[in-house]
Amino acid sequence: MIRFDIITLFPQMFVSPFGESIIKRAQHNGLLQIEVHSLRDYTEDKHHITDDAPFGGGPGMVMKIEPIVKGIEHLKKPGETRVILMTPQGALFTQETAERLSTCSHLILICGRYEGVDERIQFFVDEEISIGDYILTGGELAAMVMVDAVARLIPGVVGERDSVLEDTFAGSLLKYPQYTRPRNFRGLDVPEVLLSGDHEKIMKWRRTEALKKTLGKRPDLLARAPLSDEDKHSVEELKK
Ligand code: SAM
Image (cartoon, rainbow, N blue to C red; front, top):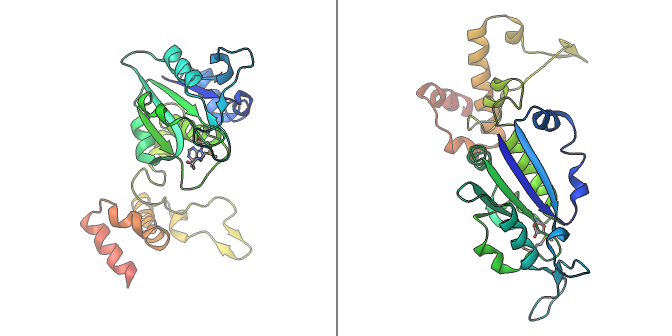
């Protein structure tokens, strides 16, 4: 069971994404717990102010550090919690990051807004994570992406565990192509081997197709993937 505590200025944004489908069921089944907290609840002034103008001038507003740190200190469980700041300046979120975080028991996610958070936040978080090299209006969507990717790695969350283990990135390659009914769609046939019932042949075909897809679409992944001698031979053949 992982508990996620999310600190945000816009708690309502999380209602639908976490209130549907797999993530909803996982919470219901006690596999994960997601609590969303309004940053304004940690302010002490009567107007619940969470931002202020930047020292030194410049455009926009900066998120104040006091309410965020108050929230962290209120929610943190000593020796158990990992505190994460969502920021485009953080380390890039990958499947490896998701796997690492899926072994934690308690994560606090801080969602920034405006020009970001007062730089001194770095002394109160364990890591800074970015979901990609682009700028979002706030950390909420980034936190949702992270929770979703981490949650589906928790055993029991996705019904068929094998499907998670075979996903793109899980085995360093893109996933092999998949088809379902009908066998023929507007003259496009399903590869014959998939209808053969020969599981060994299908497994071999899928591995070669995964290599082919990765070589064509993400050669950078292929260069880092642990490949067997047979894989290396297939790649050489595919390159020809
Ligand atoms: N001025 C900041 C900068 O240049 O680094 C960008 C601030 S952004 C408009 C507001 C907030 O959105 C950030 O504090 C962060 O929480 C979130 N955010 C934006 N892009 C993100 C990304 N790629 N990954 C994670 N969080 C992001």
